[in-house]
Length: 337
Image (cartoon, rainbow, N blue to C red; front, side, top):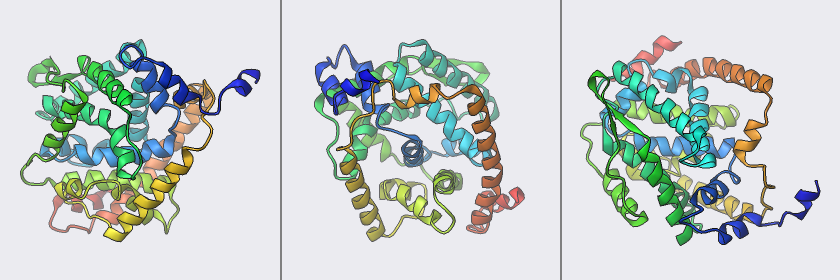
C-alpha cells in the first residue's frame, strides 16, 4: 500500500522517457500497450483490425471456410484466444519463453489448418503485413481520432519490437513444409510505405465470406457490450474507425458520413479526457490482472463464453441469412437456426 502511494501520478511517461529505445524496447512496448487497455478496447480493435486482413479470397476461405468456422461458432472464444496471444507478446517481449511458446502454438495451429484449407497459409507477404500493420496501429488509431500519434522514440521501439517477432513465425505449405518469414520492412518509414502499398493491392473479385467475417466480428462486439436496441451502435462504432477504402474492398456497408464524423469526434474527446486520468499502479497491467484471476474463475468464465457463443451463432444467422439471397454463404446461415 505504501508503494502505491509513492507512485507518481504519471509514472509511465516518465519511465518511458528514461529508457533507451534501442535497448529497452520490450519494456517500452509493455508500458505503452499493456497498462492503458482493457477487454472492451481490445475487442473494439479486434473488430477494426481484422477487417483489413480479410480482403484476399484465401483469407476469407481460411477463416470462414464453408460453414462460418470459429469466427461464427465460437466468436467470443476466438476473440479471447487472439487477445491472449497478442497481449502475451506485448507484455513479455519477443524473446521470452511465454512468447516463443505462444507463437509456436500459433504456428502449429496454422499447420493443422493448412491441411483443412490448403493454399491459405503460405502467403509470406500476408504475415508480414499483419505484423507490420500491428506495429503501426498504436500510431494510426489515435491519429484517426484527431489525437497525437507515436513519438519518434515510440516509432523506433514499435518497429524494433515487431521486427523481432517475424523471426519466429512460419508460412505453411503442402506436405507439411514450413518456411521462415522474409522481407519485413527495415524501418518505421519503410513499414508505413509497405503497408500502404499492400492495403491498396487489387485482390480481384470480392469473396462474400470477407463481408461475413467482418459483420461477424462487428456483431460479436456489439452483442457482447451493447444491449438490444443499441447493437446497431456497437457495429457503427467499429465501422466508423475503419477507412471507407477498406470497407469497400470487402463490400461491407459503411455508416452515414455524419455518423462517422460524430463517432470519431466523441471517441476522440473520450480518449483525450482519459489522458488526464492517473496511470494504473505498477503491477496492474492487463496481463498481470488476468494472471491473478483464480483458476476456478477462469474456468467459469470460459464456460460463460462458450454459452454466449451458442446464443450468438443463431442470433447472427437470423440477422444475415436473407441479406443476400444470391449468395450461398449467406443462405447457408439458415442452417444455423
